[in-house]
Image 1 (tube, rainbow, N blue to C red):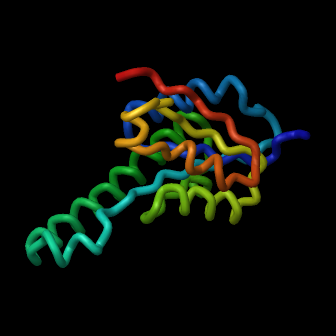
Image 2: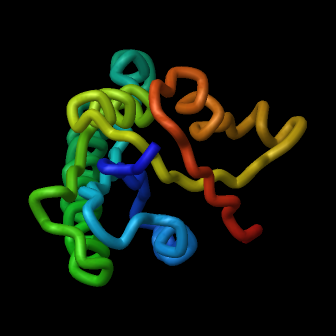
Length: 150
């Protein structure tokens, strides 16, 4: 099977550079449409009534808005660096796994590239595993890049 459509899921951390560098070795150079997605996940609103004042809620909204702007800037920068059209750089707000699957379906991708810290044991339980959650709902091939230990 030839890969025609690729989605690269990154965030604005230093890991994004590593994912793009590492995956660049494996991506088809000719004929493939490459897109990127970055998802900004806001604090769940059900905490707002319990823990937040109106001022705190406004601060959170501003942080999410700033996160989206930062993600857009970073994604566009990566797009220019790696020759990915800006129209193929997508920033979404919401649940990371849901938004990745939604974008993958909308784009009808063949391959998803993303990073994983490959946490084990209690660390995985405490931190969760976005990559594992994405794998369970995937209807496409995946290339998981093992991220460097920080």
